[in-house]
Image (cartoon, rainbow, N blue to C red; front, side, top):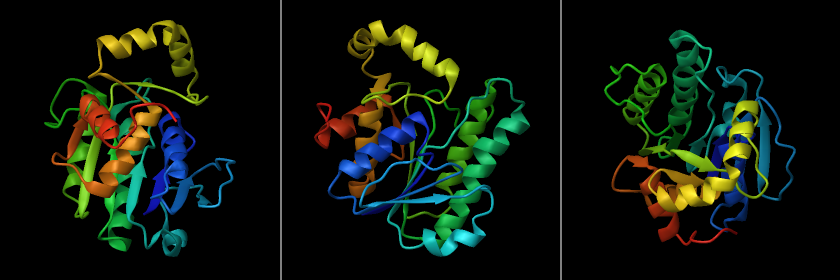
Length: 229
């Protein structure tokens, strides 16, 4: 399976990249982003693109892939709805439209978030925008498209968020995270589990197109990710 990964330098993307490089079923991984990951691996290729809204000069390198894992995202804090929609919805759809044209048989997996508003009419701005993004992706024409809605994601294997506020939050929560995972298994997952679940869904599909945290955990554990690697 040949996979394109967007957002490989983010916390979730780092975890997904690790699992892809470990998985023998993944034969090639192409990371696409504004910054290099500075990782080296025989099946890893990197494509640094300053403007992800314009992939026209790189289209030949984006063809022939089986799946795309889109983990690119940003916080809505301090942004207007228009600003947040541009970097969340507009950018995602610009990339997706290019990929579905080049790879009509592709599986597209988008990392959204718990609480996303599929009605697009709720009071929470980020949830509306995420809902609009999900709905557009599901209607775009990919062979298969799946929306991942994780809740709390625990970073494993030395992975750290690039966002200072998130790093501080995880540091403060670190002593109680194992307890939270036991008390709220349906709302808490890990970077490893998200990566394993994405690979499993890309390989075998899933009955529902929208996967909440409990679904992500179930799929990953069914695929053999019950323990950290």
